[in-house]
Amino acid sequence: MTVLVTGGAGYIGSHMVQALVEAGESVVVIDNLSTGFSAYLPEGVPLFIGDAADENLVEGVIAAHGVESIIHFAGSVVVPDSMRDPLAYYRNNTMTTRSLLNVAVKCGVNRFIFSSTAAVYGNPDQVPVPEHAATRPMSPYGSSKLMTEIMLHDAASAHGMSYVVLRYFNVAGADPLARIGLATVGATHLLKIAVEAATGQRAKIDVFGTDYPTPDGSCIRDFIHVADLAQAHRAALSYLRDGGPSTTLNCGYGRGYSVLETIEAVRRVSGRNFAVQYAARRSGDIMTMVADTSRIRSTLDWAPRYDDLETIAAHALAWEEKLFRERHGEPRHAASA
Image (cartoon, rainbow, N blue to C red; front, top):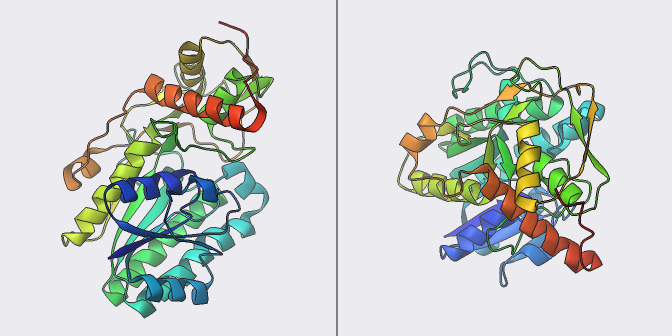
């Protein structure tokens, strides 16, 4: 039984592939390498360089490798980019998944795990936000993922497919052994930007909005370590293999940290200072997003191992320092705090 991981050379996908291989699973990857890196795949994992929307490619991979489950990561994920180019997001996220589902149905693949987002909720009425909350996305990114969720539900109902939708909150950190991590140039993840600033790769970090009705005026996020997220996918796969019914689950820790608190955590673990510049609110940003995690904890055999902001920051920093050495030599550290 083989698991197909689309986008498996990307940030979250590569951690997923690593976790599956370590669990003894047979894995095959499709990735166009637009934001992924083939070097981050474990040795021996077959990589097919191409688009998950290429139905002929996907059908050939499924047939050749005996794929019985699909974990779908491939897509675009930057909220501000989606505001500037919404049609690209509907193509890369919604239309690509439609093509992938079409092949899955045709080939009889009846287990599907989908990488969704808490952005489907928009600004929630209730925090922590439960899975049954109203979905009011504020960006084309969130809308494209919500459309995909609806499409997956309908296709599964019509064709006997079982699925798990995992709505990610803020994914951060890196492999605890610093083997893999977020390597995309120009990434917009808050912790990634902060550790780049701590290693002297950025002159400053921008904070968008300090006038929100939150304790320190900045947005609040629920961070989840990427290694814990990968294990949540493994647990979801076991759940489906055991006959679990289709479901939608929040992936977070149920604890919120503000943007300013997150920056301070990076300063503490690095022992370095860096400049912060305050700017106006950014279109599409959500004020407070914290997960109600009761459903995932009761549904899956999953318990987080790295539920600590400073641990997440430390792993992100260790990876960033390693990445910088590989690319440029020793890092130019920011000033000591």
